[in-house]
Image 1 (spheres, protein in one colour):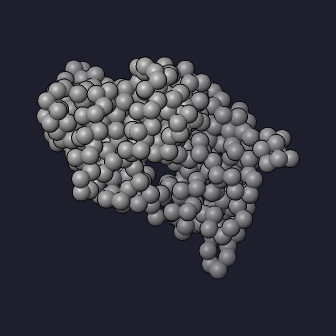
Image 2 (cartoon, protein in one colour):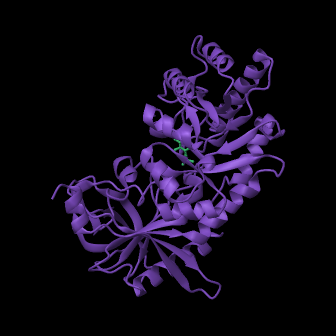
Image 3 (cartoon, helix red, strand yellow):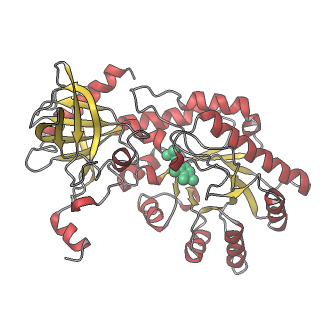
Length: 433
Ligand SMILES: *Cc1c(COP(=O)(O)O)cnc(C)c1O
């Protein structure tokens, strides 16, 4: 999709949302939107990118957007689901995923969680030797159809964002491959456990270049091949390559797409595509981020110390990463009048602030954009993953509604409620009131 097409779709959705009262300067100051046609197109691009001869389960990383209707839609589009705890597992089951298409990853799985996963036949990637010992104990008393693997840390280093780099030398995730004696110990663990048939790796997320991710996957596959060579049997049958394709938060570009990523993997790790292994992928951000935005009204504008500031209703409660780590997580913002129409006018540097009671609650600083006025709308772009679906409870601001949008052939926008706005009663109950 071209940049103007993407902007056109957003404007169409925004205008329809204002007309239908989903955005309202009194009653609906803030809302998230997910372009459901866009989600379907992203899933289709992912599925198309992998060659036909390879058996692959694409498991959506639930933490990127855990709203049950979103998960349900992804299931209907043929996805599986990757979860990392009892909440996400409950959401995946509520969305109707077959347990055989769910993958449980977490560095802190309890005995109870493991028992339940093994009973249901959910795939489990163990994160440590201690966790393998727990699984031994559980398997001693039962049979399980779960696919079982170990998450390895290929220790290939980090990307530009520390918090999303999971394959550094000292990462808390997985079994390190390069530490003294660690790979040998893991080889013995596979030798002693013939049911250990998968190898899992997730190098990192935003900020990690695809080449680094591919390098980590290559090390994981080398380890899998070493297991089979040393044991003299064909034990490893599957590789879970994780997620982590970065997205471009600076434009409407979707490069590098899934096709370019798969081309890179085919060049760097051809063994993945030889038919020898089944594959699992765990993409989150790259499927959802660019298919969502968050819209909010401008309540007031002012100047202070020569700075122009627009006070809006979108701040840290829906954009925690951007507010706390603005250099790592910049967001584009588009300006609209109160009808949702794109605003014109010369770009004027403005701070775009949220409503919260701390000075750092800014989603943009000195951002050149048409001059905002009270009653205008701003749209925070590319927030379909890890934003409105992951609220932050500051100042007891209510969690906004999230709406799915579909645009019909004649241009009509059809909305579907993905999450209702939190009510004051719900907030009071949640806070013991
Ligand atoms: C977060 C996570 C993912 C998804 O990462 P994205 O960058 O959103 O694609 C996949 N696998 C694991 C284990 C994760 O923790």
